[in-house]
Length: 404
Ligand code: ADP
Ligand code: ASP
Ligand code: MG
Image 1 (tube, rainbow, N blue to C red):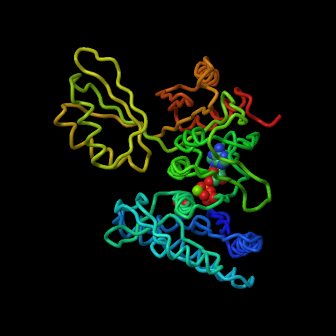
Image 2 (tube, helix red, strand yellow):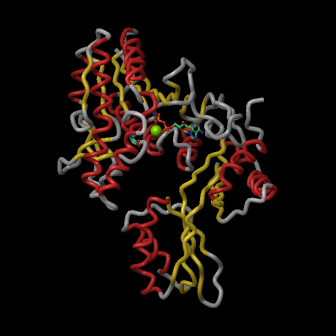
Image 3 (cartoon, rainbow, N blue to C red):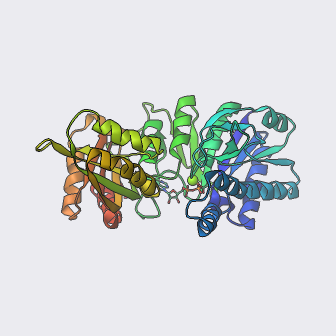
């Protein structure tokens, strides 16, 4: 009997009525003769609320305790969902990440799954139970509770689908699939029927939070097709899978954006070997993820280096730079209110002039580009945060992505 993995995001289980709705969906899938495993997120914005409480107590809460705290959110959801399923006359069992056999690294708040012991899951599925696993968490080699980073329930679902050899993995969320831009920002955004892993990776990496980046990496690595769909409708949603001949290779498929970038510029650093290694070595030791990097042309033996980090990691980046700036004889400036807008499309590879059209569109809207980076299927521009919304809408229209 085939196994189906379904993941329900926070909005899909935001209140008791919605939990009952999800229970109904799971029972129907079970009645169709499948073995069913669901991965569930914390109710509504409860992870944000837990984080807010932690920060009301401490500016820098210990990360081990943050993980203990966060993990409770998804445990509430699975326990309530199990009760709702019992009410509908089916058998269900809720499990924390640790109980589900999800082993991770020790890096609290952004742990990675290292292996999954599926014994308990398989036993419960074989016994006819609907299995409910608390998303976004696992257990470290020290037997501490860990979490996988924001949006991590997507990764739990895809990893479990892979480990169990599931027939399908469905990601239920609050929109009907993957769109040509964030549908909550661009009302003309069009739902995409199919997206390749390659495009989805770029989209997730540049801000389309509908799927966590790591979940897409996993899906691609293990060849697991993902269906992204709404828990409030029967629309088939968007299939994310290996690129094939039938997929329309749009030059530009989607516009993505982020509004939480900060830009740091190191001024007049000596232009000699080893400087970049020192700077980015210090940042990597501090576990800061650097996104875009630009080094300007050297003038009189010195050079400026700019890079971006997400705003949450700005304090850690500053601490790391404070340690090395004296030694390097340099200082840095910060641009806090930055954002990023990107165009993504598999057809871009063989189509010149796409980047030029993006830059022209931004210029026509009086939007200054501060940094640019490209890959073979993506162009990203760092711009002022206040102009991100305008930029996304203008690019969406310029590339003709809307519903006609
Ligand atoms: P969940 O709680 O179900 O995991 P998320 O909030 O993490 O849901 O992801 C869904 C949200 O992603 C949508 O509400 C939408 O605002 C946002 N989003 C951003 N870009 C896109 C896109 N290109 N397509 C669909 N949704 C997107
Ligand atoms: N509840 C976690 C978060 O809000 C994990 C998830 O929803 O995927 O990030
Ligand atoms: Mg999510």
